[in-house]
Amino acid sequence: MNKTLMGTFCLILLSASLPAHAAKVKCSDFKSQKEAQAYFDAKKPGYKGLDRDKDGIACEALK
Image (tube, rainbow, N blue to C red; front, side, top):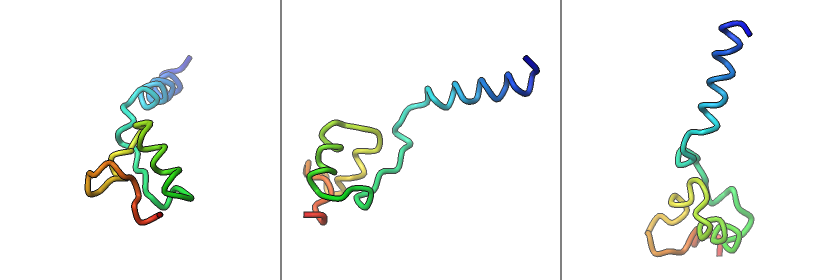
């Protein structure tokens, strides 16, 4: 395997193992507050951004 191909392969593996907290999830990504809340409750990548006032309710404007 040549060095360029090996380097690309290593970058792919590295990016797959990076923490998912870098994900940007927005309320507009969801069809309903219930769907956003389920995502939030499951603590999936980027979930904290769905609760701006930190009251435990995600995407309140979608109600």
